Amino acid sequence: MDFFTESEKNILLESDEIIVGFSGGADSTLALFAAFEFLASCEKTEKLTALHINHQTQGNSDSWAEHCSKICQQHKIKFEEKKVNVEQQGQGYEAAARAARFGIFDAYKEGTVIILGHHMDDQVETVFFRVLRGTGLKGLSGMQRVSNVKGKVVIRPILNLSKHEIIDISTSKKLDFIEDESNEDNAYSRNFLRNQIIPKITARWPAARKNTARMANLLAKQSNLYHRYLSEKLEKVCDDDGLLISELIELDYFERSEIIRIWLDKQSYASPNESQMKELEKSFFHSRQTANPIIKFHREDAEKKSVLLTKTNNYLIAEELND
Image 1 (cartoon, rainbow, N blue to C red):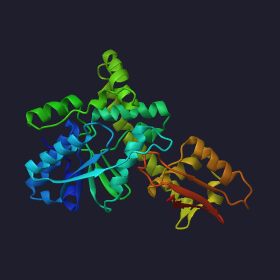
Image 2 (tube, rainbow, N blue to C red):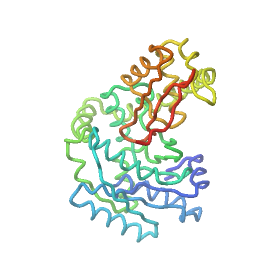
Image 3 (tube, one colour):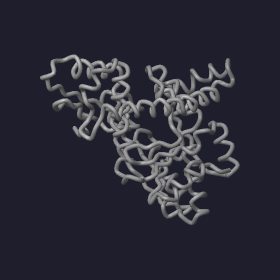
Image 4 (tube, one colour):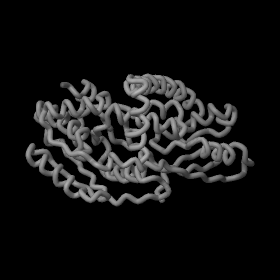
């Protein structure tokens, strides 16, 4: 089975370093061996590293790390274990753990390829979760198969496979994987969706998972089209110094907000949610022109850089926030 598209294969071959997030579960195990088998066919396995991030929150966390290490030893795959402390700073455990993982990924140089084992069921959970939090077009697009996160290329080669398909393929390939019993703990929001809500929906509408994944794929294409349209608008209100406030103020609130989000996204900065955007609107466009407002915000999952927004003369300026 060919897990990578031709363009993804080119990305892998051109990269100096390829990191696979390897938890030891069926998903990440299949993603690891998909990458390993392709690179072996090209005699490029020296680029590959299996990265196990030990969250140190389960009683058998160390045994999982040992399992992953043994698998890699057996197949002569370079292995790294990174231990993290999951610190909840106003967000839930899942978001804090995600932030800890992306903190590890940040340490790799730009151009590194990161392969993750997200699959169709993860995609459906992501879309449902974002709907419940209140999201826009981009959020409904779910996770992208190929994306850029802080200069690293992220590839999700099994995103179009269901969990059942992954188990079947892994079994047929005789891949050794472990089960994480914490996936049954419905105290975690994603687990609650996965174990309680989505099964009830699919019992009533059997095609719900595939239809939701198809919707996310369609919305991703529509979001890209929308993004290109706004990028053309952005060029008219932006130069090397920042966004021109005098040009932005001529637009209506919604268009101005979307252009600001696109501008920040292009620089890998966190995008403001609706309440933050209203604060930004009040401070930069409804205050007296002599005021010098300062606004900062961040993504709780740390996938994007935290940002500090200021006004200098007629410009809205964005800088990375490091505190």
